[in-house]
Length: 368
Image (cartoon, rainbow, N blue to C red):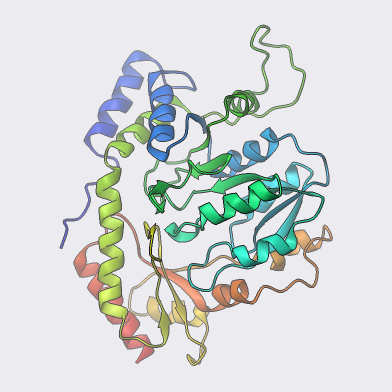
């Protein structure tokens, strides 16, 4: 058994934040911002990091940086958070959906090539709940069709596929540092790339597209999506402890698996050979022979004091996109099944063995 992690914001975080306050560097300039951007890029295997205000804005400027023609298509999984489709639609592009793999719940590459048309310009894989997409295969598909790849690695800090960390494989990669992520800045995010020209454009887009030689002169519209030096100070301290955080996540997953593997009514998370799953959240899916759905499952677990969270509802079932004429009459059975029969259990970095025992016992009692 490993010990419970330290509080999420511990000694180094307090020290670095105090330094920001004492020196007056609290906004979007300062040494911690530059250090965090470079350290995170290096950790993931990329050359450049561009800190932004959250994971959603990271996706928005990542798509915008590609400067795609209106009507260009970007392929992504239906099973994801709306931020992914939002970034595509706001750039004037069209989200084209595929289903996810029934084992890993990540982008089903068997379906991707069938969706590529002469309007396709990019693919957006999402490393779901900490298990990576098959990036080597995806990059070959992208190269074959001359497409860009935007990794959404918000849920997969430190995850690996065949020895490479996610976030340093695609043309661009986005991260969230929200409070429930493996490392956090409270709110915050980052875009990574190894393309210097893309990095310059990202930095411009996050900062209102100020001209370098003439600050209040603008030739295009940008955004105020800056990350603060205060947030970066927390992120840098968190990065110094990421190995401990990852050990705790994998301990959590092993502990749940040990206690739940006998329940034939559940599908548990997997880790395919050659992959490193970081188990951002421990998600479970009810088998079809369980006579209730995930909503009822959550209610029954709550009676034993166990709070849970639902899995994503597919993009093809979102009314906001139907109103725009998108994804009408589309069906993605794996995504639909996950949305109706899946949830995730308590998975935080302060989870104790006693809490794992209590949650696992509640699951057994509900499914007895």
